[in-house]
Image (cartoon, rainbow, N blue to C red):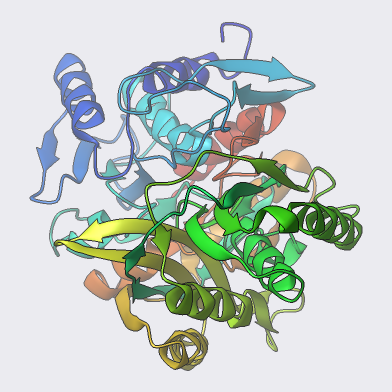
Length: 486
């Protein structure tokens, strides 16, 4: 990492990537932040949720500037390729540079939002940066529930300006984001006998890119959960089978990359299954040509499972997964090119819940308009309700309404144009940011979100464009130097 610039930012990012920090397991990074604050003699405080605030007084001559809150989340999405031996609870992220991008070896990189955390630490550690009073806020559990932002209490920080460092396109300034919620469905099933005289096959969906269920949903990427359901439904027209196991996707905010199912068939049906899946795989490859070229749907022999899912539940599950909406539901009428409303068919998992065997389907809905979040959720709810599943919702989060007259936005725009000779793009984003939740607790907040360029976050293909980190750093320092006066 020594050759990467700005060196101080990449040094702290490297240190962060030695510290396991899955969502809801941020204890080690919180301890590191406490050690950092003590080492630099900076005020440190932690709230009941685990959010951390480290403050730094103004440099000489900047005492009359408004206090600026710099905010990033300390947790990361933990996704890895199926053939990679890696434990996110214990192992350090292994990074390398290729063609100007910083990448990780077979896992998510953690730049979302570790590069924001590293940037804040670099600011706090530096003695030669001109700025007014700053408060660095590090939140927990952004990726799996926005718990830190939800639990944040009024008065934890004092600033009226907040710079969120959790955006993914250098040169783009975000002043609004979507809100969202999760809709989950549970199918109870009965375990039935797995006859040794039957043949057992495994159907795999692999090779998909995956991606962020907000920022990438418009790209038309393949969903392993949806493709697997289609494969099973398509097969049912040619062959009688019984579902033995199903697993696809992982996180509610990631487009599913991989999935598989185990089925039981009569021996004479093996060849028709192979032919059917081969033809279906070719059809899916044609559908996704140019966007998800690596996709494959394969079938192979496998061991007899301990049990099978009762036929009636298996059929209801497959039908519901095929019917469940997935992808963009509507585009913004106010901002050209912005996705307004979407839903992500994220995952299907077999679990034991309080002694009951259930199949859990997880989805997430997003929109900048509350009524459209409800509409998208209602579409999913009715789909699974018709399939006789138990449906419920996970806590939602609000959107962040754009304010084009923002004082700090004008500073950010003017700074960027002066530094780089071009105007930045001012946008809203379909992904969820914590800003909407901050606005609920701190109605007076004036906010902008920006950051360096990242691609394929929430997947093992996550990468950070090295050159944009220096542009982002220079821009941020200039914004702090030109912060509004009190």
